[in-house]
Length: 216
Image 1 (tube, rainbow, N blue to C red):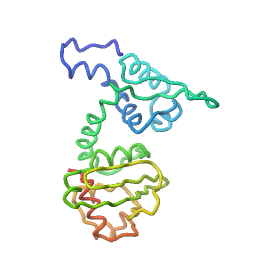
Image 2: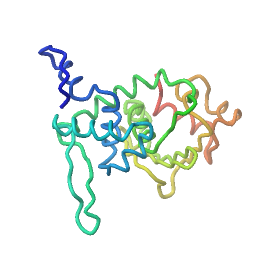
Image 3: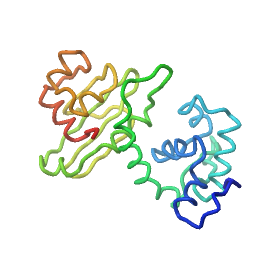
């Protein structure tokens, strides 16, 4: 845990002391997708200096947020994972992602998108109340450059993971950020006409996707 203190007996202050340092919550974000090796974390956060990553991991361990374990033979690799206490940050990170998505705008020069980012973005924006109204079971495969993730919407539940899914109902290939579609700036038909996306589905399928995963 960081030695810096806000000097306040407050839950918010204590939380900031635990995970408020630069990069800390992004490490937590990626670990919410699954355990990671040090090299995996570096690959997902390429702008973090090596010494800062090591420091943040140590602080998160000391705070009881992250734990290390050694994988079984033959790899014997050290992986980092969230403790049950750290995993309780799930809804906090999703809420922050949902709130922050409204300010994303255009992709800035130098910004990257990773598989973990896509997985957490879908989890953050999913609206189970809208899926319940449709009462649909539909699988999506989302492609963004070389990245592929899939999402299975079944009534109010959502399953998201990296990689393709067998026989998806709809394949969506994004040619850029989907925010104009997801925030209602354009509809599915316009997204197709402008080349923002390609799909093996229809404009109506894109509208439904935007209904399930809105940015608002």
